[in-house]
Image (cartoon, rainbow, N blue to C red; front, side, top):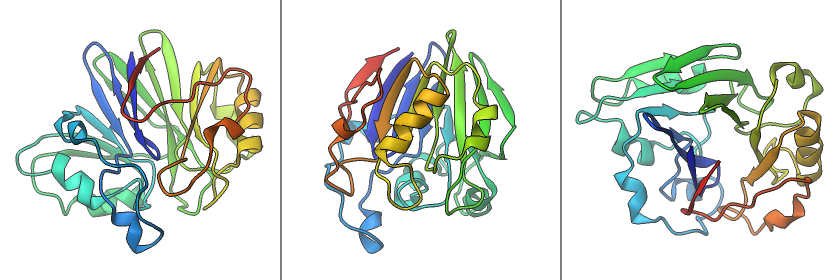
Length: 221
């Protein structure tokens, strides 16, 4: 399994048969509500051909129309998994797409990948996280969320967790993210939500087994 961090919460995950794209943000749309992006867009991101797009919630740096219209249009045919808050707007995109509305507890299987939707605690009440199981591993992308103990019962035997550390906008801060990773006993924790709209140093996240990703650089699990 190959992963590439695309900035903010964005990830590309590639398996033997399937390419997944999670929360892509390749524009500067957030400047209208927050600030300009601090990390430039690598032109290679526009060449990604995802089989499945996962969108965790309806905030502009996760559900970005300027980005998504490149991947969801009349020339493409995608499967898109998203919560109710996002799904209602996806019909605006042209093309023949499989638009799947998910909530916590939903399981979706595609070739060599099984995707489970889990809950998130965020300002978008429909926000979700995704557990992606493939090649004998489980990767949990939390989406944007605070740490709430009730979430733990949904998170079983996760190998890798990708989680926010910025502590703003109803996200875990670095210390709560460390506790969360410890409570789910993740073998590896990867911070996200740093460096794009802020100047946060990811090394403030001090979980015992941490990998600090480099934007646009692929790594293997």
